[in-house]
Image (cartoon, rainbow, N blue to C red; front, side):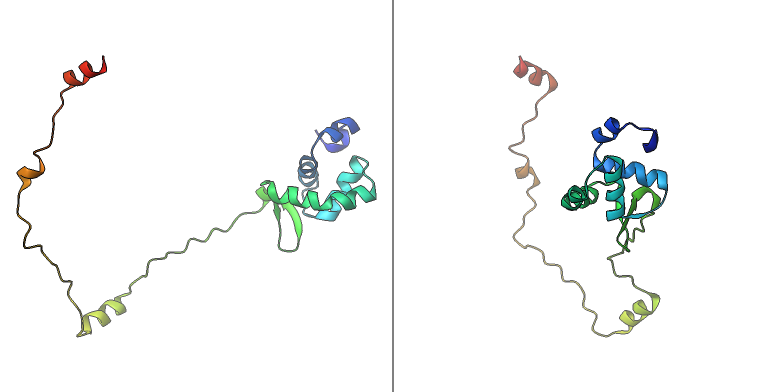
Length: 144
């Protein structure tokens, strides 16, 4: 239903952000926040002093409502009309063929050193000595 077809009581029961959503949808264009709020005020008969007092709250309401987006020029529009450019940056360093040839030609390539614990005996049987095997039957008996 269009805003002009709604009664004053229906409009007064709507929140400011819902009315703003309907206005932007019907007009199909972006608007400055003051113009948008003045139009809301004219629809529900708000005085100029009330508009001036509540414009800050209206701004906060629009910023928290994910249906709206503030554009670079300071005007507001519906978020669904604006595609978001998502840039995914690859944090990993890419190595080119030239880099690989440069690395191969360097004389100071260090090999990774691996240290082994000489005192480590292979006592895999000792690791399993405290292991207890429980069958399904034993498990059911403990549940009762």
